[in-house]
Image (tube, rainbow, N blue to C red; front, side, top):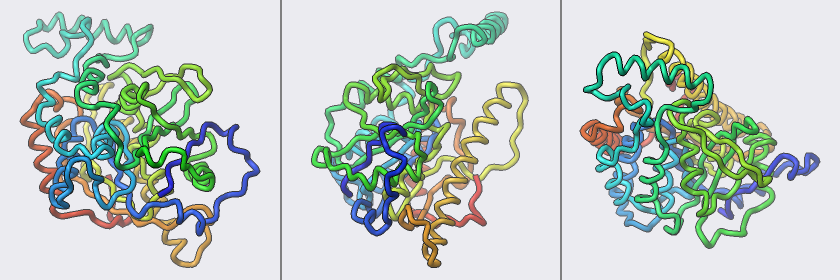
Length: 376
């Protein structure tokens, strides 16, 4: 692969530019891409699969996770993708094995009584009412971002060399559009082909921004991908025009960045953290809001996977979509639901169990996607 594309804005790419020829694109593609979905603490399942794949392939730290020439992620999948991108499989295992003790999910001090087990019921009710009133006026989130940034500072050194290109999604709320950040190995810098840039415009949309994340913004750009609305404050990042923008959860626009992966790779392997769902219950307004958010994520992901499948069928039957190379898509997902995605961050035994389930799932390998049987 030559490299990923930087698409600074719709204005920067002329509307009259010729769209790419699929035959020419093959010179700029990789054979295989790994895609990691969002899902909070259930990312432990992904990490277990990644570590098992590295161990089974006799891949040492600092080496690419073969056969993948690209790793993409959203939310917690973006954080896991960074360890894959830098070839830090031992560090990934260690980070998840100590995660609960690092208390990365912490409510803001003024709302601490909500989850405190020894708090009086009256105190909890007061804090709930306080937060409910604050979010209609000035408050943007319930939890602190500082512990997560501190965890990144401990486990994610921006100076670590990249061995596999990485892309992750965030949502730019200022422009109300998706945005993708990337990191490349040093020998790929400056090798961004213009035909691939145009292909990304076709795949992701003319207004989608795809840009590098330098060391100065790496942690904040990753945090932005994981900044679940209401749970974490939006992240302020410089936009491509130099002004500040407000960024939140990448899962809103791409719960698993399969669209960008299929633009670049001919084989796309997706690690999901959601089992096929059954009936859901919604006892209160918060549950309804969260259920709506999860439903949106699932629909975006299923639509993206289905589009890849049918577009590839069309290409192989002699069609001429004219923009993207045919791609095969496979996936791994848990057979039964994992633990709740936010609550489990504080329970190491639950995290360890999900990690072990990922290691076990890796032994069965990836299943080919079939639109008739696949459902989240």
